[in-house]
Image (tube, rainbow over all chains, first blue to last red; front, side, top):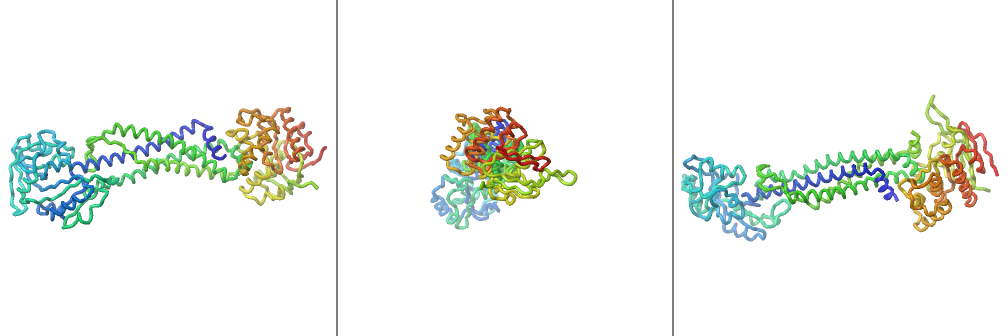
Length: 407
Length: 230
């Protein structure tokens, strides 16, 4: 009976209840939509980062990442490759030779980071092949062609087909070594650093220049099965780390990006607390208004035998009914709103966050666990909001309430 | 020997303090026997409503004690008083005071639901009382769809259906025309006669007073006369 009474009481002032419900529903929509946006943005950024060149993980000789010493090549490469290939979720790998070099043309000289790659392997790790805006991608693992970023090509005044010289220090003697290349293509990744200072050359050619035949500095990897955070489901420890090599996940390679994705939860929690507190105060106000309007009636209810505890519960039940109704409306709005934007996407293309340029539309992603959590929180905060009015009613003597009509 | 339902001794109720102190009741002694049909009468401000509120434990005493069916109300806290009223006292208010969002049937069975009376018995009792108060066929109407007299009949049914020891009614006919008020009192008197149910009601309507078997007159918070009539 108390539930029935609560539900019917709720609809005595339809406009007020509808408006309060709408406030709760919009609050829920705001939480769900912001959350799905954050998830979508994180997914987008992690995808951009891992697709651009990073991969999901990389293997180096210990110390290479800090020192960038050309002599620090991977130890026992054959064994390392054999171990890696035994990982059931390995989808692709690319062996890279990396060195800092000088690139000179008739237009000038620029410091660059040169990457010696196998063009076929690299296609599965990065998107340089898709980013070519002028000329062609590399064709072979050897040869005298190279590709570079559009900003660098502008600095060096280069066009596809132009000749240029790469100068680097060989690993064996420390002497300067030079090689003449022909510009095959110009890429535009959207990443400032890559477009302005990176060149890709055939791996075997760079190995010859650096006198590192059969050796590489890095193996970049992609995996077919990832966790929610975008890391491989199966760990990459133990055998993969042996022989003085180390494997690092993208979370370690780009800690700022990883931290940003992790901070999403904290941001959402803070946002949620503020939002729900504002909503709770609104609900408390609504319930108090309803309580004062019906004070005499509550006096009657108490007079005919309803205990203070049952009367207080009546207010809490009203809040629960209000919360449940609002959540149904809020969920409908949230699912519809998210589905709409998940279909069309939100265009933030070109904006750079944490060193990552957004290259695709952001599509909000609905996580069912969150979709269950936020309604639960909405109802929880609604119940909390009803505690004060309920306590006030619980504490009020029936005679005080009955006298209110005469005021 | 007739059983005493209410034994009120030395009831004093004071409002305010110091210069603004008002004595609503002064050393009132009252005994109500089972089957009484008593009217509390007196001019406005004589203390009729205060006395009824104290007899049912809605208002607190400054001094004295009230025993209803042998239970001292003074010793009870808010929850205990609520439960006690639920089991032993039926209340009828001047302005009907039905719960507007509940139907006639739901209003009448409300107290029985709190008492956890079984559904079948609830329905049987509600049906009986609807017939008794002449509202059969109107059980699914809401209070707003009934006349004042009909609402007060529902209020009486609500007060009686839980089989309390006593019904207290504060000016139950004040909002009704004299004919409807007379009919209502006749109905209450009929229940008093047939079911031996105890009624105490306040009034200042001389036509209503005529129907009472006992007339307790209050003036300035004191009982100035208490006469039984046949």
